[in-house]
Image (cartoon, rainbow over all chains, first blue to last red; front, side):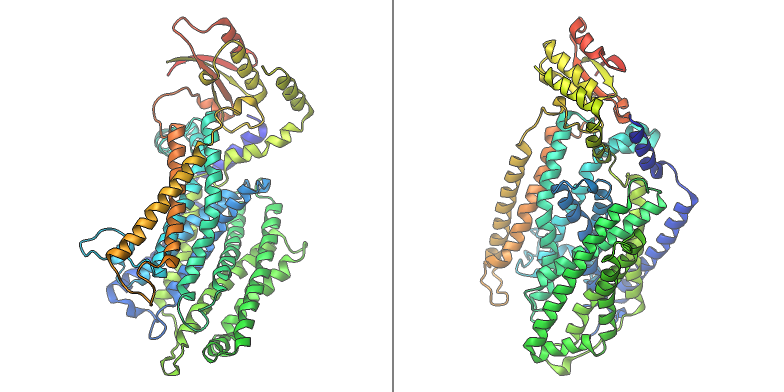
Length: 451
Length: 168
């Protein structure tokens, strides 16, 4: 093995074999945060959904905001990874797995919220199409059932898209491990040996998955937007919602990816593999998405304002000038002013700059989801039914716990699986080798001797 | 099965062994090449190309599509529930379900096909050496009871860091 490959394997397997007290401290802390959410959920199930701040007419608030937000964050990984694989971007190699993991965990967290929100979560399986004794099947004309199908497809696809390229890395760990770990990784590696046939099949499968996963990812957030745009609620019934949601999802997803990459770079000491250029490229992508987000908001707002329909304008002014205005303008600053200011200049498009902008975007995008849902529900067509909403402690704790759960799952994953694909990194070194004169001469001589 | 294999630390050397084995009259299908990463630039890596996964994925997509059409249409006809003034069999909303199930069919079929055509999962003993995980490339052939011919031994030993015979 070359010196580079030796170092690469040692660096990327280090988190799997060495565990410091800092790791356990972090895990305990995060478990504490997650248990707050679990406790809050248990309290809600035991006491009833009235413990939340929900009231007539605001029946959707924090939980559905969290649902849309986390499904959006999930767009970081698989979609970006699939696109980078399809265009064969060389700089993708250390990025793809970090990204794909976000998708799987964010989807798991996001998909949990419609179930949490059911009130009677133990009946969630009624969404599934199966022949029950009741002979009642889901209504396929309901956008909520579309969600079930879209999220199931995306979660299945993303999990497999994450798992397949880890198989060769599991085989590598299997060969280097002993005892229980060896048995565990033997199972995970499925008996992978690395024959030419296996490599070809794996690469073909990844190509097909990448092609399939892009439209699925786009469909998922479009379908999430249909939960709103299919309803004749002021501010929701808009044809722009599909692409607007998809763009927002990719936007928040890239921000989450930058934060995750910067964290593993620092805490797992992976500076040799996650270079400033990776952040620079993702920072440019974030800038592009920020501008696109600004464009969508402008198009949506202008259309509403110009149409001047009474009910639409009520919701419009709630967010522009009235009770929701502070949140709205915070969102604009966080999603547009901050990222565009930081990321437009090469001097500030550093790792730290990208991380600051990304934190702004994550905050801004959560606010955006909240501002789509609550002001509209609180100000529907008939003024006598207007209402407002204030979150209560259980909802806030559940929100905080989701962030804790995301970090916890990411930390535990990076403890079990190399967070950067080792075999893909090794391939990344191949073209460089081919430029060496000696190697090229040898290769040419060898090809000339082919029968 | 008894096999003779050699370990190489450079793909060029593995390629020479592969070429040498073919010259020695060993059929391509009998030569096993195992590596910790794919080497697309070398001829030994160019065999076993196949479009079968793409075809099976397409087939999986068609099965997913057909299942979705049957599911939504069958359900709507069996339980004729009027919703929002839409027809009983409403194709516009059904398209969403049909699309997702088509893609799910293609994705799941791809993974099953990958496993089936790659012989995974497999926990039987087969030609393998853990040195592959250290970056070595294994080139091996099954040998008859009388042992390997001189030509095979020479092809495998040229440039190899180790030559081994083992039962698998």
